[in-house]
Length: 327
Image (tube, rainbow, N blue to C red; front, side):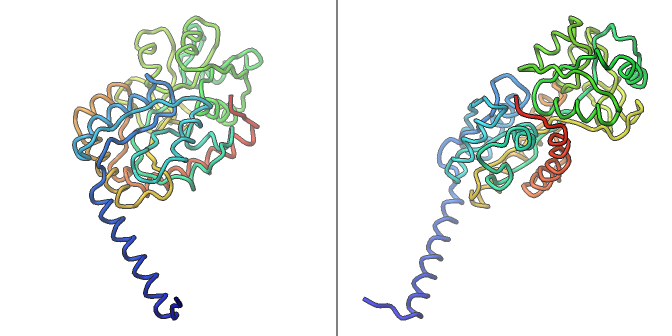
């Protein structure tokens, strides 16, 4: 049986219209079952905490449970890879941070594209880094610390835990014209323990990790790497106030879906995220651990896409120039 060109075009158009209609109907009914949110790190860390706090609140607007699953390893690449290979149906999501979804592309390139293989959903929260030292370092402010570092840089050791801390330490070296020994750790907790014990001299760590030790007086804090003070530790000056303007660094988190996930589904998930982040209970739980929820205008897919691209452009050259590799 042969079709004329006009009949063939009508047939193709009808199939396309039917497919589009089915996708639209499917998107309207999404979700019909539980959604899995992959955390590319072990349970108990800051990204895992954010996932569990917002997943609990997203249940109501979506009408389905959000199951948080930890798939750790390779600096976050194993968990992110699983989402990259998942069906683009909105039932497998990836929560990650600028370590797993930005820096890994420069330090240890995964077998997928961190930008092209995902649909951005929303930027969630940001946790500024803080410059801290062992309490016996003879410096009482950031400028005194930098002077001391320059005088002792051949023997100074800096603990690093993860790609964000590593790149921040290298950027600090570049800006202050110093150079010191970088000591890698599997996590921030053992690094801070060694800092408290005096085995290492300095860390540039997430504020949420360091606040308990800062308040207990077991480490010294010099500046928050942000342009405003943190409500979690308002007594700590910003780097601008302390004399190192523009040294901004934070661990920020976002939510992604596999490439090809329908836009209507992305929109539904983003709406649920925004409702979760607007909830006073969620805001308090995140603020208590030093996590700053991003402004509403930054919670859109477009805002996350633009921010992720800007972060790649900012941090990849620093990592590559220093020839940094994934641990």
